[in-house]
Image (cartoon, rainbow, N blue to C red; front, side, top):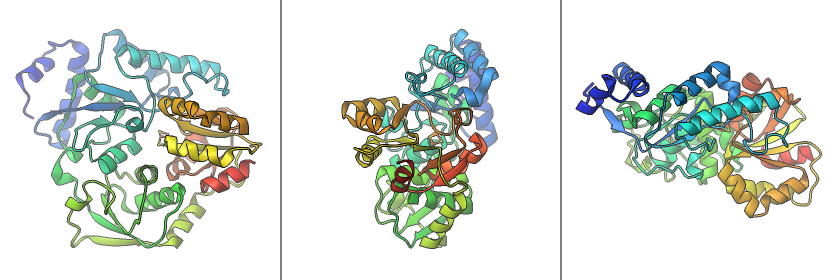
Length: 394
Ligand code: F3S
């Protein structure tokens, strides 16, 4: 790989041992994937934040890095942590877990990372521009930024994202390059999609079928950004789709040539079968919305639906701190809490320790959450739309 004189100097340790070690990791990655050079990144999103995922060894690694003076060079955000960083006690997160989670947040803060923990950084102050190179980790954020925004990122692992943040560059390969962003298969949608959960079911179905290919959707009549984030999240979870195009909906779609590609049709019965397959429980102990993290529009919609009702079982909405504060200002938090629900920031249904908090069956409207909850959180899953889920908790 071609390296500039400054980059050679980093490898020779001139910027200290931390940057040398992390830059070496990026060079190795670039060599593996045939990158010819490093490219600057505009922003980074680092995964591996919840104590549930990284445990003590990961915590000590981050503290060691912070202790050695590691500092990020570009705007860097975090993936969800294991709890609401401010209101964890009120929501019943275990004390010992909280102590360890705060050690992790302190280490990231010391490195100059914005300790806002969300899988929707683009809704919380970290919005890349079209064609901007970035290095993000969380699979739904990667899908959204590549597909809906038209920014460029591979799906980074925790260490390679941290390395990109501290070195300010990433190797030029994969989805950073035009030639790797063309579609492999056309997905023809022959049914109406109404709820976000329908988009999640579609994403789950397509991800299972096409694995890591790049789909080009035709026939989606309309979709807002919340529905597109639900679609991308589920495809990245059941498959490994990091980029999709959707006719008339995503910014690079009109640049793509789909002639000669295989076409897969998706019917209403495919969507229904996906719901059936993902439902492993009946009555949720808890319902958690916000996978990916809820937008303000999604929080407003829950508020509107629960206003004046009494929820007899827990309902959480997972979101970013920024959205939680906006929801508070708009009075949505008050409405949701008056009904018995909670807006939980900085964490999510999968990376919080819900299995240790007495919950066995979780209701979700997210195809991604339905995919991961059985394995990561030992949960039975009720996967359906927002209206059904609210009705089940009344
Ligand atoms: Fe985000 Fe957690 Fe879902 S990271 S996409 S809310 S599993």
